[in-house]
Image (cartoon, rainbow, N blue to C red; front, side, top):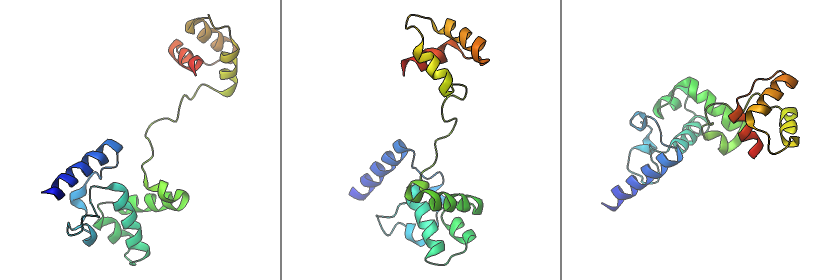
Length: 147
């Protein structure tokens, strides 16, 4: 019973962290058969690591290693490349979406920082469009000025 509570806690922690394997039922590798409490098919990072280890150390083909760990062959190569480039951090999923505002260049940010504090976001947005040819929403300008 204590092991079940531990598994529930582990599932909750992994879910909160965004590290829950999307298809734990697809993990058929022997390490994850439930006989060892350390290995959990719920743990996406652990499964990815063991998938790479199965390929490199145990000599499984990329297809077999990927399939027995619930991933496609294409996903295997993406994980392998990311691990090669970043080490253990490469096993974490990258955040989705943009990496910040695209239009706010260093030059525009410098201009915003040097502007008088009392000016409105709408005023500044119009000025930026006039000076730099970049259309920004007033809220984007206001957020950038708070940084």
